[in-house]
Image (cartoon, rainbow, N blue to C red):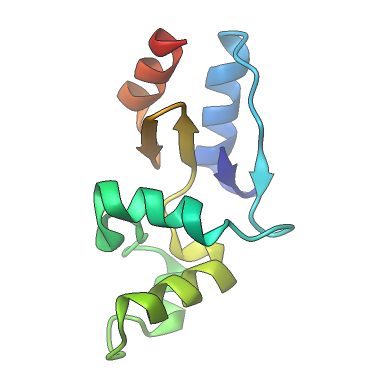
Amino acid sequence: MFGTRKSKETRAAERFFKERKVKVHFVDLHERPIARGELTRFVQKYGLNALLDLDGKAYERSNLAYLRTTEEGVIAKVMETPELLKLPLVRGGKVLAVGDDMDGWKAMVAAE
């Protein structure tokens, strides 16, 4: 699970898995950035725009809506500023979930 300690959605996901006694490996994106390969896995499944928190303050401050940049440029910006993402990013085996995705989390628990 990738997220930040301050994100309420990340804390909700952590609580969801703990209640079901599923061991979670948590990566705080403020301490360690997400690996490019890991982020690429989510981008391939959902697309970059689906991963961005378009309503968030960080997106507004970054001016990404107005910048002309490549997907690689946006990915580099996301790796610097994890608040641009809909958190948490959760991977359980081959199942991926973005944001507050209760159905995705249930699918991960069922797959174990």
